[in-house]
Length: 148
Image (cartoon, rainbow, N blue to C red; front, side, top):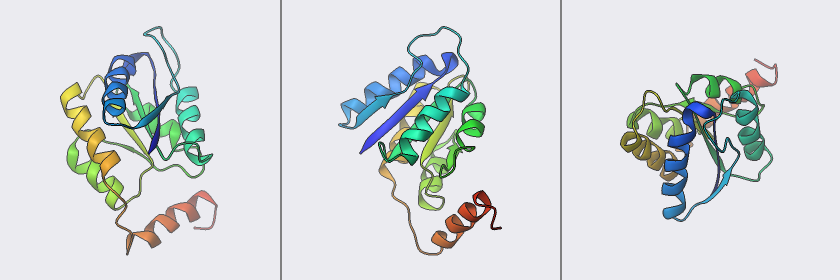
């Protein structure tokens, strides 16, 4: 699986930790920035990662900012993205099982590295359950396309 990852200055250090962990696990990781702790805006980075997903270059993405909220809001503006802000393992598992989330968003100022790596592992290892959830995902797309 190829993953896209991105962070603003507030999430840079955690992004580097997550990226190293994913590479160690054997994933191909495309880093969409930022590349240091110098202040940057999060929306353009969220767009870069989201574009990698909808363009088919990467299967899933991970975005990290201070809280994870801004990245989540920005990524979800891109058609076809289902970005989920997760701060615990239960949400990371079920956003994949039930929502087929394609981007995980986390907050480096609220989630420690140990927990973040557990969340990441659940996000990348859990497959979409399908079944009754397919219709629900279709309804999300209908909202996005102005049909609902």
